[in-house]
Image (cartoon, rainbow, N blue to C red; front, side):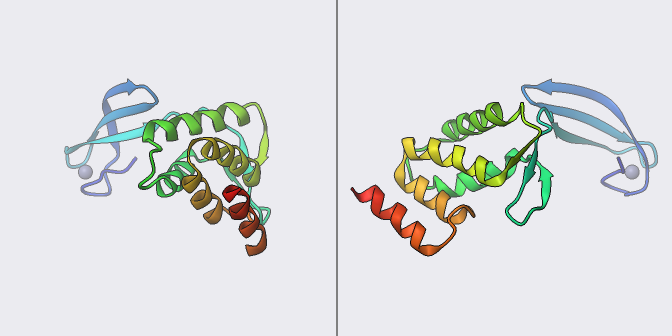
Length: 145
Ligand SMILES: [Zn+2]
């Protein structure tokens, strides 16, 4: 890893601390001697995600988290709920080699739906699993009943 300050020196790790799933490393530049801290997330899931266009990417829980955060704004769904939903997704996909982004979306939607319908609709409308507007309308109508 390059130094954040001079952008050339190699760094050495002077301290490492593990807190829950985050690893905090204190680094020192061999060139300018300045120190800075980096955070790493433990990558425990190797599942690949196939997107609708067919692209394959690594499972990224931060993506789900940011989507969820937007969806739950001004609803009673808490960040604790968000973490629970993410844990649920991870527990359901971690044994699999590959899942589709749609499958992940379905898990998240199911969880959101049981918690808060506004958050559910918001998430569903930005998530790519509604194939067209008509289908989305039907979902909205179904919630009114
Ligand atoms: Zn440096």
